[in-house]
Length: 151
Image 1 (cartoon, rainbow, N blue to C red):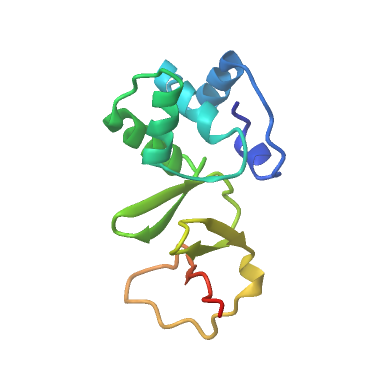
Image 2: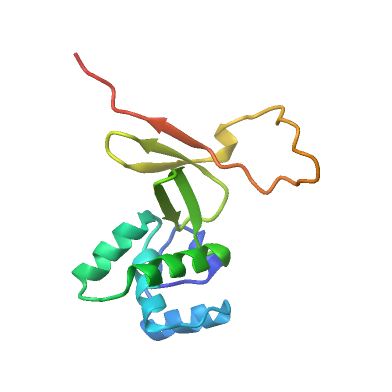
C-alpha cells in the first residue's frame, strides 16, 4: 500500500498491490525487496507515527520474520529518500511520520500519543543566529504534554 511521495502528502491513503508498491519503490531508486515492500505496506496504509518497534510487532503479528536490522535500515533509507520524517522525541524514542509536509507535533508523555499541528500555528522570531558556515535545514518542534489531573 504505497503511493508516490506527492500522493503521500494528500492525506488520502491509497491501497496498492505488492507489485504496485514494488514499482513505486523502484521509481524512487529503492530496490523493492520483499522485506521493504512488507514494511512499506505497513507504514503507508495511512498517515501515522510508527516506531521501529511498532513495525516489528506488526510484522511479527502478520507472520513475517524480518530482522530488526532490516527494519531499521529500511526506515533509515525511507527517511533519506524523503518518504518518511523522523520525529525524535528523545534519544531512545524515534518515530517515523508518513506526513512529510512541514508540521510539528504534540507528544503526550502519559499515553505516548503523537498528534500533528501545523507550523503556521507557531511563531519563532527572531531565530537565533546560526553557527558560522551553516545553513538552516529545518525546524522540528515537539511539544511535550501530559494529561491534566482532574479533582
